[in-house]
Image (cartoon, rainbow over the protein chains, first blue to last red):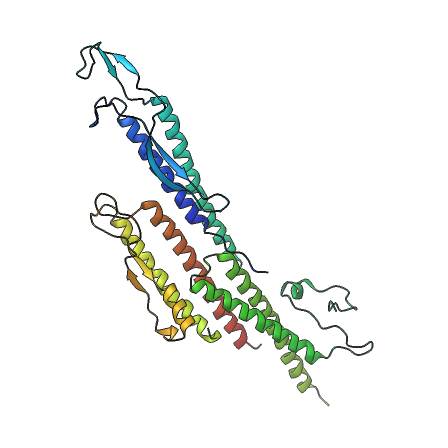
Length: 135
Length: 103
Length: 117
């Protein structure tokens, strides 16, 4: 009986760590720019999302895709006539970032990060237990 | 042909774990010779050693990063070898005792 | 691989794993250094080639430190990823432990062979 080769769980967990770390980067960018009304292209800051992908049917881990902008939600308008970026009617377009949503995403990403770290730790313990057989 | 000794009726767990087989009786009334049993032991031990060396080589060349195949192969070889050594020591003991007998 | 040379190869692999541990520590220390590329140790593939081709004597294979240049660089020209290095370190330590146990077992078996009570 030959034991089939599996991709190392450590590699897969590392891909999970990196993916969640990248997600947290994007989330922190959204939070930091939640009031940025002016970007080089003239619009307010548009909320960003990270695309994650994987190979279906294979035990392969997660791949970090590209950072896309959230085009689905509109820029909310805030009435602030004295603001430098206010339009003719005194409305300012604010970034489409909602802090509660970002905070929830942040908690989820950090929990996932911890879970991946736990996988690595447990797998190391398992290997140590296996090696006990050879004492 | 399963190699089960009809007298004991059951293979002892140690030899079973080491994958050893005690040769079946050739014909009714004729025991498998002790020499044949020893030879089987040695062959099995050598097989186990070869398998363990192969598994170690796979680990060394990076062909297999997994710990389990190496550990299981080496553990089997170790068990098989210990068994062989135990038999060898007993045979030597028996020889010494025989030599010491007053005739 | 000749059976009696397995122990020598395991010892060489242990040296390689030791060297790799130092390379990984170096990578971690240089997390922020601009222009730094991560280091690794080349040994397993060399051993595989030597055994397959039969050209070089496997006992002459030395582990060598090199820069894989396979990982993408960030804005400062640095390609070290903390999570990746931790993963590499865990795998390397696991490998080292396994090799150590295997070698101990080999020596134990030799002791048993020599020990006639």
